[in-house]
Length: 136
Length: 136
DNA sequence: ACATAAAAGGATAAATAATGTCTTTTAGGG
DNA sequence: CCCTAAAAGACATTATTTATCCTTTTATGT
Ligand code: SF4
Ligand code: SF4
Image (cartoon, rainbow over the protein chains, first blue to last red):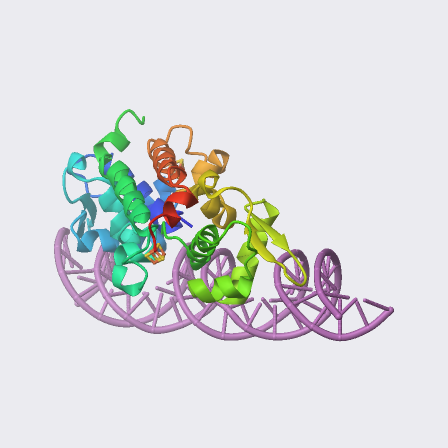
């Protein structure tokens, strides 16, 4: 429970690496995959998801590759994680209270909402910029 | 990711129900299961785990059943969750930094440690007593 | 002792999710 | 037109979750 999947871990590694590259140089997926030690085909899926929501910009064909969609300081870890893992929901009822008929009177329900808040707060407080800085 | 399993949810429901019962009356597993709407065989497994670590006391044979192992105010939600889900680890490297050779210089690593702290802090702050109170 | 009640323990099965691969399609550059 | 590289979708494998069933152990009451 409560564990980031490989996909999420790979997603972070990949985009943090991209954020650390020169802004104007498109990166080959294969290069990123090699650098961060992730199966290239798996990383491809991840970057497709990033691309759909604009976290990265993709270019096809010769000379193609990926660029960061926005400045690194404007992308939070929360966005990256949610992009591939979906919303942070520590318990089902947080996403869909209606699905549990107990949610009306349940004393545990608000605790999970609080947990959600805290997790999101930590992840939202970290930008890609900070994750790249002084890492070399 | 980051989602409580059914097992965890059931565990909480079961033990909170037990905490709300008279202190000296042993509860039948089947009664608890019915009351909290959980498959009895599944709840049995959960309560076996509780029993092993003393969260509940079990009594076999005629007139047997379960009692809370300690006063409700001394049992935190964190204990209950960890009893069945294992330790709260938002990412592998939090439990075992050695398994990721990047953990030495990785800027993301401390973020997950922080997330772990926050989750544990919230769950540790809630006792079974509070979860039972004014719930009827 | 014996029958009964109830939890403990083990084996197994079905459903779901995670992890990863492969093939085909689409777009851009030369 | 041809080469390159990402997009898209189908597929395969494995691991985890979510149970169920069956036997064993332990306790109680008669
Ligand atoms: S019982 Fe409470 S905590 Fe559990 S799913 Fe329902 S509302 Fe959420
Ligand atoms: S790369 Fe960083 S965050 Fe990811 S597992 Fe390794 S230490 Fe943890």
